[in-house]
Length: 173
Image 1 (cartoon, rainbow, N blue to C red):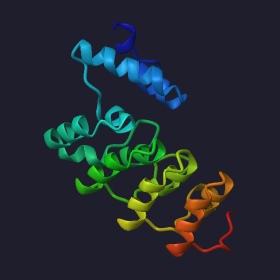
Image 2 (cartoon, rainbow, N blue to C red; image 1 turned 135 degrees about the horizontal axis):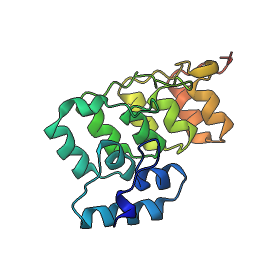
Image 3 (tube, one colour; image 1 turned 90 degrees about the vertical axis):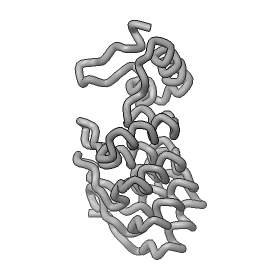
């Protein structure tokens, strides 16, 4: 359990390190070990894990957490998209997360960008668009959500974005 509680030089837990490196099974094992010693997931970890019960409890206790931003500039809503957690995204939006919030880092993108950049999760992208995400929002270097979906071969996401008015002629910087 001691290792499950450890943090790296950036302050990230072993759960975050495993999750960010794509090791879902390891992250889940760490979450279980932490739960066993009474160290529950924080708002970022609960979002990444898709633990909507824990996330709701955190937001009930501290409503501004819906707007929380990690030290590396990633808002919590972006993490829901990045990992394809539509239920977590819906809860965060219901609790006031800003669908148009831009990450506070060089990527300078929205949660829709974050969703399409990695998970390509169609339910999360659909939710974000239904809640007002801009299909033409320019992120860092001028990349639009359509650029990200196309570059990753997410054909269904390309179709979704075009149906929501994405400009097929938009150019990056």
